Length: 346
Ligand SMILES: [Zn+2]
Ligand SMILES: [Zn+2]
Image (cartoon, rainbow, N blue to C red; front, top):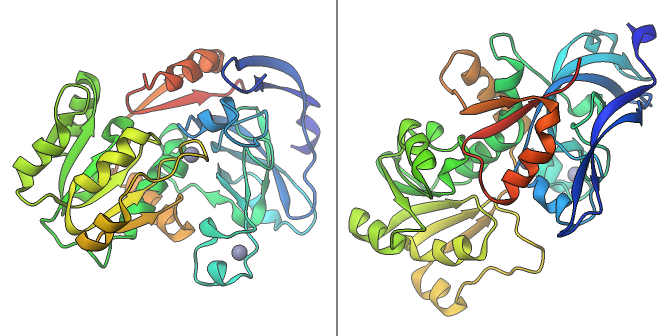
């Protein structure tokens, strides 16, 4: 297997990040060799996460090869990697590595480790045929889950599970939760014991949100969402998960929940955008604001197991690698319903 690995590969590369960014499809990108604790993964596909826009628009320092929802086979192992990992089908996700020693890692949340390294940020991402991954943080994909179904669960799916888990001790069956940005195709499934109010825009996202378990859908472009949520819940929802990294969504969130309600933010707006929330109202209303980034490995394992038995079916559309530039444009326009998965040339 080792001998069959070529030296150059195809990759999608972000050029000139910022407002005028473009995506170049190249076939001259060197394939790296795995170092200590590292493996080389030959990818079959990768999901496209909305947070890739941060790299494209230069909202932070990212690798020019983006992507962090990759699925493939381990084809090479560096020193200190167990041989048994070779030929395993694995997921390469946003968390490339964490320190495993800080108090946050020891509590079981390496996804919030201050020392973490991230795929597509500190190291090249999954929009390439071969990617280097840290073997200690790989996810083995269980039988029964196709590559394309597994891909969006690695970030988008895990993010929703992680966010919801922050409310485990706060909500009860039958409570109302608003999913703002429900048309991403990974939301309502996991919240069956809650009454899900979906918020997004357009007929496609309405249909997808209702299909995947939301009780009602409000279109933020054509309806007064705050008023509609009030009508539907009388006092406001018990909690809301805010997916879009927009000022409008963040501003609306506290007004969707009742007093002593919870706002969980998973969106990633530009770094300079603060949470538009009155401190006095926050105090007087007893609101809790929670930030949540992806989730834990245990949560991902459970999620993949649920997908393996068909309990979770993310809404995916699979595209050829050549579609990447167009798909990134669509992401910028918020024009993707469900999840886009890209197959890599084999
Ligand atoms: Zn992501
Ligand atoms: Zn740590």
